[in-house]
Picture 1 (cartoon, rainbow, N blue to C red):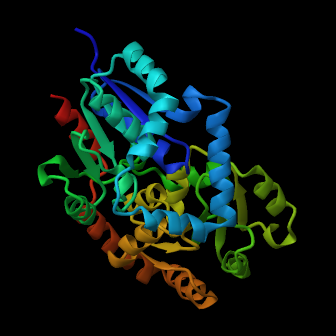
Picture 2: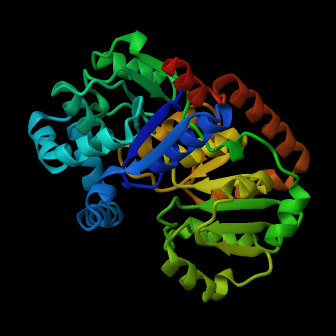
Picture 3: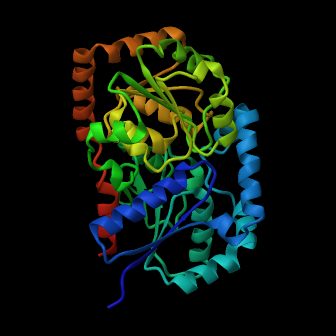
Length: 371
């Protein structure tokens, strides 16, 4: 009897979509080792030249013209991917995607980005007999995710389910599972060992992240945090942005025994374990990881659109606040220096997390749907 096979399709527009796909794949395999799961970034896989170029162009647009990105997001918010766009995707990806599916012979497909979701939906309309599950990787429900061919939606919150229903999706086709995080986030680790491995001190610690594309170096509030460096340990995680890392390492402002500059790492779960506060751009994946560790969060410069919706969700549910002034920095940094108050607040966040989020629920839901 052959293994059940799951094909997870994503795109590289931001790191969160593929992170969610990988987290779901590893989570399913941990819960059910007999499962075979394959993650593919469709555009990059099918066109190794054009795919990364499109992602790079999007990244530059996000950095230089975020308001335009927000305008595009809002202008098509209520609409599914239109037929013209679907036809364009069809012409670019149809034959090759069909060949990939035929070769891998999955039992089901999970899409964590609207582009492969639209491609597979069109393939289903043209005769593909394959269950399609859609994992929405933010705390919003943009119309581009919606398709009649989707068999089941996996969503982050009841509010996202409600928004999908407002767009005509039947309630029984939507399950609130939360966004999956890697099983590394399911467990706790000895803090002393983490500090030793990363050469960290036992003192109030702030983890500053900018997602897979790196933090915005010019942000004044982030620079202001270094004024606390005598009493606070600051870990700046700049992801794959090597230029940013080099720039910060040569800046006297960041040259201090209590400041660490970290590039790409697969051990964010450990850094979150020893942190008392997370400062981050509000990507759906990073925020969910922070919630899984019951970390209070400060959010800076959300990209208009889905990151604003992510902000609203976590602020409304008491997990964070917008970083809009140096006074906000001072207030939160003072809190984590008050060990008793900080411990009480973390306990409250753990209670809220346990009420709202179960890290195993999404992979468990997919395994259940496969039966």
